[in-house]
Amino acid sequence: MRQRTVLMANPSADVYGADLQLLESVAALRERGWRVVVATPSSGPLLTRLAALGAEARLVPFPVLRRASTSPGALASLVAGSPRALVGLRRAVREVGPQVVLVNTVTLPWWLLAGRLSGVPVVCHVHEAETRDRALVRRALAAPLALADATIVNSRTTLGVTSAAAPYLRRRLRLVRNGVRGPAVAPSPHPRTGAFRLLVVGRLSPRKAPDVALEAVALLRTAGLPVEIELCGTPGPGHEEYAEELRRRADRSDLRGAVTFTGYQSPIWPALERADALVAPSLGESFGNAVVEGQLARRPVVASAVPGHLETVEQGVTGLVVPAQDPEALADAVARLMEDGDLARELALAGQSHAQARFGLRRYGDELAAVLDELAPEGGAAPAVTPGGRRPRPRHARRPRR
Image (cartoon, rainbow, N blue to C red; front, side, top):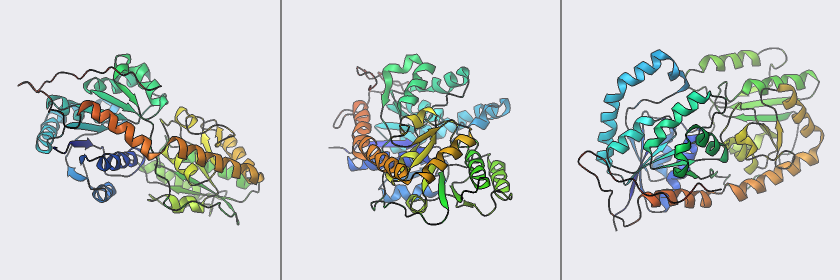
């Protein structure tokens, strides 16, 4: 029986939220006998991780749609470079010869079109659900998904945002909640000694809002509570000045000596072992892998009340939830954990149990593989392609999972 091939496109070679999920997708499909080829526009730490999983990596130059690309000049530049990029992407599809193209995020519409024009079934894995965007922007971002035969959404939040932005896509949406890998060694309760140590994991960007966490720590220290914080992450493209502002803020008298910048950390478990609690102050999340990692590490979690976090944290049961952009509320929640060790332990244990039960890798792999099997059945014939590069669309009888 011929081995099936999936060509995955990823916007970078970093290893953050959506990139980590790509690695779990690669692992799941390799375990199920697929040949996996991953295309990225640059080199980076992702490539070593892919090789360890038995996947092939290809460096293919292509544009990535970013928030900075929404200005008229940036959009014009993207459009001008699209024809050349599309030629290269179609060449990559032809050379790899996949049964399915899987596009990892909605920021790569050129790959959706390249797969479509090449006559290969296309899946887009959507990790973005920005409710803060204007309705027009959300509709524009969702429009290229019409080129996909199926769209995987990583949470009920993403499902709702995508369905509202593009109702015509509802029959092609597949809800597959993230699978998050836990630590290799069972986590132990953190013996508190000295200062209460907080951890923030994620890009140093305004959307992730580590500045809110810094202000919360400043409030706690001003009140006489011994609190320190570690920021694990690097600035995303265009956010270098924001990262410098964080460093300048950390050097002021109320925070001096209490903030540690440790950059990108992988694996994240040693940092979580050092922490008494994980803080997730994001202004918007579709899911929030860092929260689930904190739960799997048996650390109490304090998260902003954004839709994605509300799917992983139940207030007072598996963590604490506070309003976004509210340093005072965040400081109050941390103080509560410091004052009530029993509560902190109960939240940590309940969070760990919840994360293990709901976000396991076996369930994720089975559901992901089912979507690809629907488009490229094992032992099935190759898609029928007309001279114009078109093929019949597969029938989609199933509605999104509830």
